[in-house]
Length: 432
Image 1 (cartoon, rainbow, N blue to C red):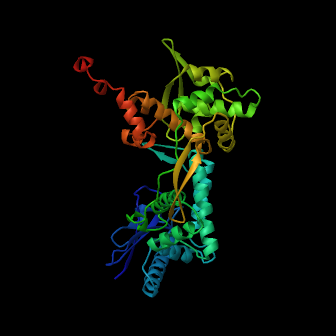
Image 2: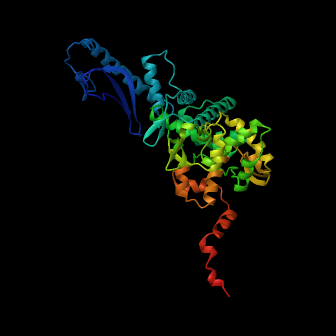
Image 3: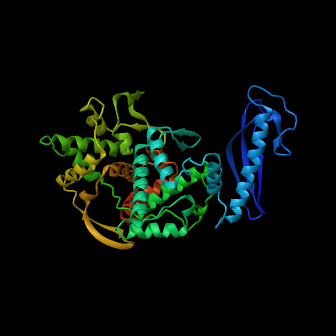
């Protein structure tokens, strides 16, 4: 049997909102904030209504108390009656809408999931909704905003083309499977779909914390963000050297793109960080020159020693890199790679419509802005720099995360081990 109770959450001597709590023996336990206002000193917590004897004040009178008591009874009866007539389970979303309709029949319905996703993105973009980062909050990074926008558009396309309206409590395992099938049928890969599932789960959790629903389907193990090995590569030391040495004086665009990309290699940073290097970041201490920057995505402070090649490149631009656009870099760095004969055939595995597809692609076609960071981390590792030290530069949090990130194959590992003292052995042991 369902029950509806009213209560206050404060004892301060000023008008405070009245909260409504609905429970039943089936596990329903929802709380919503009502537009009712009440002076705590005049509240009878035991009877969940106004006290019998109150004094008229400027902010609250006996007449106000009588009106509130009548409306308490009316709202309570309405909720209990409609919950009895309801086809389906009582949800927080339903309770919010019922209370909202009672106070204003002309008011719009409770915010839909589609509307909430749109608001979530716009607030994140405007900086009024902040992202959690450890024990602090900061604005959403550009890459995250771009990903959220993609999720918003993908959700809207799914709704529009299937003709379904998916609200908070419609996000179930069945919905998840339909969403996957919809995008697999369009040739999308697991990483594309998984990215949007991951974002949707984040958005759903935020909405739940804000009291908009009580759906926990997204927490089921089967409601997971899919992923598959990506076509990530790294450039070898020889390929990086060839790119650095390439004469591009006859093409200013390629020269600028090459320089910005190599700054990413030599700093092992994300594009959002290495593309904004400027002279104020250059520091010097005890004759050692380094770059000090705060990563946009994580807020992590990184100190990066400057290689001679990095010093040379930055000096061309008075230590402030020119403004670039990631899309332009991704387009032109492939052409630079082609000019540098980075043409090794790379066998890649992708998933189209859920099916694995293998193909061989010239390496230069796989180069993009993020290749720079992966290359920098991998080359430092192969050069013998300890992972813990590389992580201080790159900003990776755990060694497991770092080792998963770098691209070191069995051949590179074997060649690296061959130079280790253990495998070199004792020359005297093999003397005749």
